[in-house]
Image 1 (tube, rainbow, N blue to C red):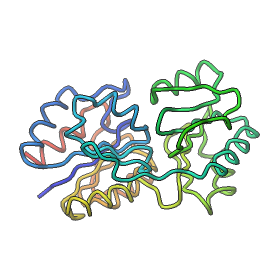
Image 2: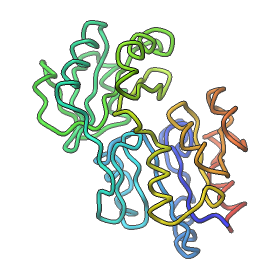
Image 3: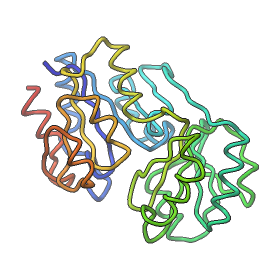
Image 4: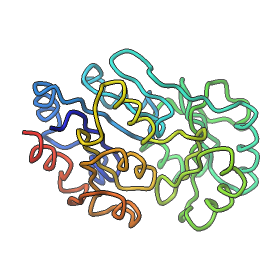
Length: 260
């Protein structure tokens, strides 16, 4: 029996227009009646998810910033803050590579973007944006650093970031243009494992959906793990099951099929 469901947003539950499934509210209502908990598991920050899912704030679990911040029914049950000196060091290194940098914090998203296309990309994922000419002057607790490279990052900046910081931090590809940096051991999967322990839910009772590399550990912690049709090839190899694309309401279809 499934007792816990966790899903990524972009490329997974949201369609390419960033829209929720039309039957999302009804499915959440029906899951609540069956005492099945539902977790939004995203690289987005809590301030963004709180705005998007405000009507469901007491129904959902929020795994934010790839697991660095977890919120459940009024309580921050997990918080992982990056060391200030390390954040400054990463900022300076990324600036030297000409990359756009976002600092995902408790109070907002601090960034150095000037390119209109980069600003539009940031706006599609984050709220409470604060632009700084000198990004090292941020004033916040930082849970995650998101690095953006126009044209694709997997085969360019990612290897450089992994070589320089991979021994000390989790440097993770989270999208075609994005790399996320968190504390070592911080992943959606470790956060989901913590949620499972907190709720008393087993691997065999967990369902999860994802499409990109920052979802892999989450899928590994779930028996009913689904890759999307549009997933990265490594995600497809990881998941136990597969489903349709994010534009076909596939997450809701699988939930209805297996839970109701």
